[in-house]
Length: 227
Image (tube, rainbow, N blue to C red):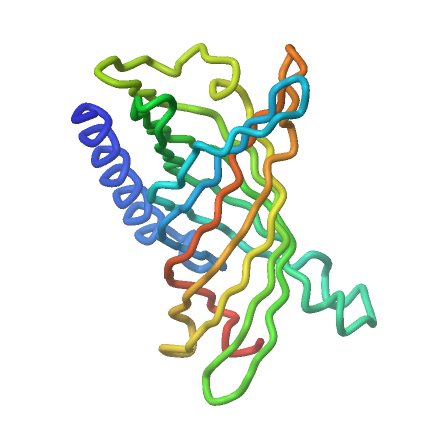
């Protein structure tokens, strides 16, 4: 477990370094969103006869992401005010999905870290007095990069485990409340919920990780003042 914590810290430091590199380049002249938060992940398992396991309890995990935004279409090519407000979002994310529980008086826990890509459609509405609200529909793909299961006094590596070590596809939604700090920068808080799409296993059972996340972030755009 200590190894996992040290690796997680290393990934966090690497993530911060990546943000610093981006901010020092011409990419800063584009529309970027940086956010950090906490995941609370629901692990759901149904066996082949559709009996659901209720022993999983969500544990907190880290969320980090960087996303780039651009208009869905050129505003000069559409007369629709609604379409002009739509932004296409893409980026990278790092998530910890953790859980614990007790089976037959034996405690267990899962500690997993996933990395992947995210994309979606976003729309922003100004509320006045420097406040705005943003709605985003998200599609995410993730791959396990490290993970352990601890059962009693035994610890098992989840690399190679078919339930965890495969591409995961999540469909979700995110709500953000933003406060303008200056003409180009917003501070925001966010709440998101997502559901795993590919849940069926080869043996007919179903396993899903459905995370809820909340936290805060910064949105930088040279076009903020025109939104």
